[in-house]
Image (cartoon, rainbow, N blue to C red):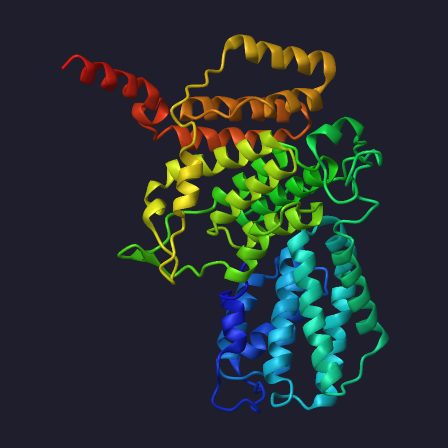
Length: 461
């Protein structure tokens, strides 16, 4: 979730000739957004064009930093109560307060009144935010509120009950991402069971009830959020199970295209070196540390080395099938965008390191064939033991090293996922497989066939 380059953030932080200048009566942009915002509280709010209001607000912010304009802009984000928009609104408010609170119009007394209105709308959005937000969105909300609180404290501004409730409520949501109540019950007789989970412990895991998920596919961003949310739930229910990691990577990779570059150098920033070193130094990563790493991959989708580190975490914790699944997902992504192997971040460090290349090429010559007998066993398992056991069996199979095998495994995953009750997710995954396979060449589909023919040709000379 990158808000750093968001167009609304750029509009708020852009410079104006006179910061103290207020929005003028008679200004067409101001009159438009002021009138349309008033309609949001009426029976005709469904006809209000939120995007149009934002366009006029952006134009107005090029002339004034009046907090009334910012309040209206935030209202457009708060109105739908979507977690992504709420997190963005928190971020924009923190940016504005830190840069313009002292100098912008209107006078501070009125600004405090506007601030109270903004906070009250955040309180109204909290119930939906609790049920539908992702871990990253919760962390963003908490961090941005802390920025605002710090500013108010340092500048001796009043902090009322609504603000306190908002801070406490959203901070509590963030800290409840992973708690003893949400983690599966583990047999305490197993050494280090409080800090790490292994495959050997899965037989002692009691899965909590699957919470409701609001499946939203109106936009690519909404669909990605839905997939990430489901992956988080699966991670909490069964830490270390491959399907949660496969789903997250499908969500991340499906939205990426080859980055713009000049002579192989992109504008992408690398991950913080200290953070990378910290992750690599963890001999026994905890559940929380692993989830933190996974969330970092969502925020920085081009930090491909993070997938390598996550696979190492899986291996160290005994989840070999998950390590293989992570590796397979990354291999598939690189096959789709082969040019990225030669690209670099803006500091000239490679997206795909030499160490990663060696890891990705391990056992690549092995041909692992899926048979009809294996498929039949999975569907028989589905009928007799349930979908969870069938998914477990599928995820313990060795990952395919060729596109044919990989797509077949993913097709089976979609079929089983459909039986699990995630019909829309299964349909979307199937459509993604169709789209991805249509443009593959025969050599990409089964390279071992061509390698064998080439070897025969060479041996006959």
